[in-house]
Image (cartoon, rainbow over all chains, first blue to last red):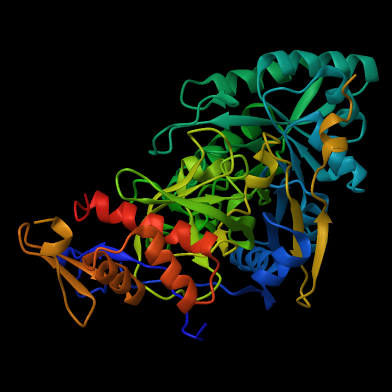
Length: 442
Length: 79
């Protein structure tokens, strides 16, 4: 046997239209050998595959960039870490250590924040469904309650009676900011007057008083100007309420929705071109506060940025289990991670990076997950060289929502590793096993 | 004449199918396999020969050669 290097046999039809001045898709390979200095191959060898990997350095850099954009323009700004975006304890701790309070949308998330040592007064309790008993606990612990509907308002009045106290609350409002789709499901509508009516109803009841106005205008907002409009409307409502009810509203909350550098399906331009910068968002919001502030004091400003803060700091490492040739000529790779772990694959085209340079030309390929489900498609069409069994692919950005929405379905949920700021990897959640899955079954 | 006998292969691993006017880019091993097919070697004979030349198991070669032959069929180059 000789030492001739083996390279899988390949054949590709020459399509002259595929070559252009921008290069050839037959040659381009995106390669990632490491994350924060830690080899992707070593990570899968040591911790298994698939595996989620988070970079603490990248989280902190994002936080600091966004926070600086606001704090350099506005004197009183606080971030609330959006638990639903990623509520792994160690991830939440990173944000809390950076100065974030907690923003939760369920009793479970509320309990999680409390278990992490966050005081009630540092928890924003949002969401359309707040069970009565949990709402009562949140009130008792001084949480920032953001009222979503009139039923909740009634519940709060009942709680006020039970506790013999006047409860400070914020109200969530929705509005037209010139974007589509308009989020009108949460809170009270501004233009219709429902928001003002709800506030009037609150003051008429005499058991609650308004200390904040909140809106969350959408997700993956690619137009910073929408925040300018939202802030303007919030500030106008604030001024009206302060005048009409002789009150002082302590804070406004612009929610989340800032876009990450993910590539939306169906959008031609890259995220680098279309996603507003932290400065764009900050300028839009703070300008509108200054322009519309009618009271002596500027309101405290809260933001609940989730996606933009962590998406790019999260990676999913997955290994090639095998491949097959489909009747249309496409090569279908079977990976050990699928849509069970990549909820956002419905909307975003991920970056797919190889663990090394592979010899040979690219060919049309498809990435499929391990599920025995026809829908388990991570990427329907991409150009890849001939990969080996065991090749490690890095999928990103996946830091936002993918772990919290990952399903224990057919396969166990994978382990999660965080690479700290010294470049050392730590397991922050072990891979699930049969005991995890069977837990609580009777 | 079989399709495979009509194919023209050059030293740059370009395969030309005159009847259809299509060209294909091979790599070195693709070239070796097409050359063997033109010599009317069977799949088993090709795998046997490659196993002697490369440090790769026959079971892995079976997958890779099968895949290559599948793609030749999809392109209409092998009946």
